[in-house]
Length: 283
Image (cartoon, rainbow, N blue to C red; front, side, top):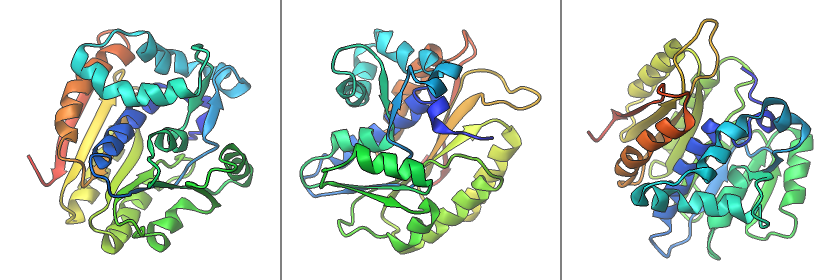
């Protein structure tokens, strides 16, 4: 699977992934102490939904566009408000044209004392990301393989924060690489929160990934998934997942409020499903 992000910006997977990210950040903001966000595969940061790539697929129309047009019940509306605020900040005229990727969503929520480290390996994307954050002293953009940062950049000096791992799945072995990276990172910073995004195409890949996570011995691993259609042959993207290690204690409850609503809103009619499971840890 080649998940070149410009083609998929604002789709259902982005909506779920970025809402989870904002809920983690909202929890970190409950304390005054500074925190750091490390985005290991940051991309260019901002996407034109009417540009060539996004227009070819139009996936955002079944993702962020649906959410912005929906009237959510009060509890869910309150939970997605920080995410929608970050999107609206990039569309000040009220017309949905630009979609902020994870670095811009995170940056929108940072307080004066917080910091963002955005890593991107692709030279052209790293340069675009650097230009997008020009003059922002709270954000550090580095052209670097995000996998390498799972060792050398941990723990952050703030000793609080989240590492978002959102690989493009352009090569085989990304699930194995995510497990290996988690073990390495957790050894260096066991108290950090880690959020690993993954596409759901082949159920067998997901089962193997979950077994590998169980084998790490790491406690407190929460699995969050949403699917918008049934699996198909040959496999195609039909769902989105996030593994959160050391999640905020409120995250499971928040997702039990949100995921059923998002499944109904973002999925093919009547086919939305969600899954919440502790791979290891709390029940």
